[in-house]
Image 1 (cartoon, rainbow, N blue to C red):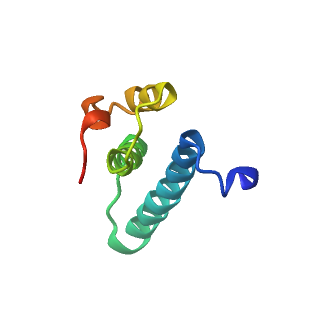
Image 2: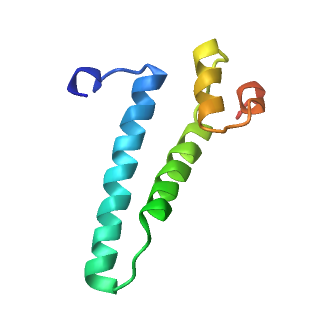
Length: 87
C-alpha cells in the first residue's frame, strides 16, 4: 500500500478510499459498542463502507476511459455520471 500512497490511478484511489472508510466505520462501530450499547451487524457495517466509497466516487470527475467504466460498473455507479458535467 505504501508504494501507491502518492498514486493518482483510479484503482489506487479506490483502494485508499476503501481503507479509510473501513478504518472509520469499524472504529465508529467499536465506539458505539463500548459507549452507546448499540451495535450493527458485520453486513451492515460493510454496507456503510460500500455506500460511503460509492458516494465518494460519484463525486469524482471521470474522463470516460475504459478502465474507469469498469470501476464504475463494479461499484454500481450509473455510467451517465461520466457524461455529466458538474460545472
